[in-house]
Length: 310
Image (cartoon, rainbow, N blue to C red; front, top):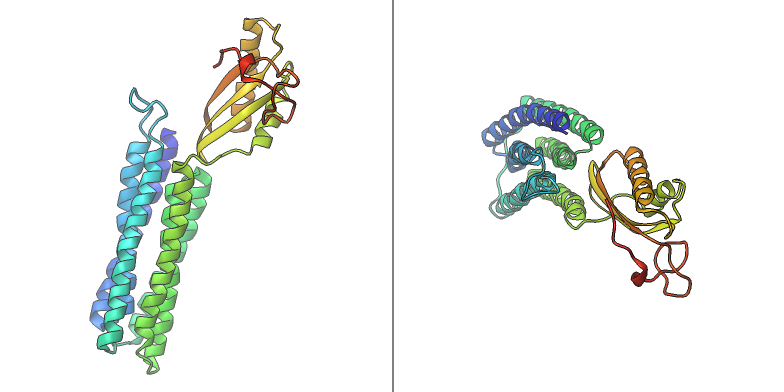
């Protein structure tokens, strides 16, 4: 895990440097030309840098090992960092809408020149590379903070493309395209907000991580296992927890039952390397006619359970 977090940090530092360079270039050009679309895009890019800082802070906490107060570790701090990115995006969304409304009301025509269009094109190319790099590394490292940051930057790619189109329109005598592009920027930002909120909420709300069917297949491949039920998973794509009830013969010795449950646990953690821990409750199989459970293998009663586990 420490190596994984070190790699995430390396990616974030590289992207931070590039995002700062892009943001400074856009903001300087925006104020020089008076184009509200460029200024909006520049501050959007600046929040890319801010989100990188938030992500670095979140990852620095998330990489800490479990302790007495956090027995499940600090992994969710990385998810909370992605929510920090969401906050930055919402702030930018409000600023962009305000600037666009002001331009619609008060009017104004920005100055457009070939060098400015060339500079915006260059920032677009840089952003495209950053998105591809972060998405690739986010998938490889299974990091939602990298994926969230890539979504943020991807919205920057779309906004820069829209701004370039608006600048070309202004060049040919259509100044209203400038604030209209700013509104399009707001739409891209809002879409990115929604995507980040969805991914973070799935983790914080403990949505299932592994399909029950796949877990059941692994469990039932172990000799002496009669079935399983109450399969529950939670966590993130790279840091998941699993607990389940395991059915074993009621006449089996405790030592043998304990050893079998360890075999089940080892197979699960081998099959699903993202599992950090597996908790298994051992119980006899259900007695027919005492109520159905979600096991796929018969019926059961809670009164049958014997307390044991790993």
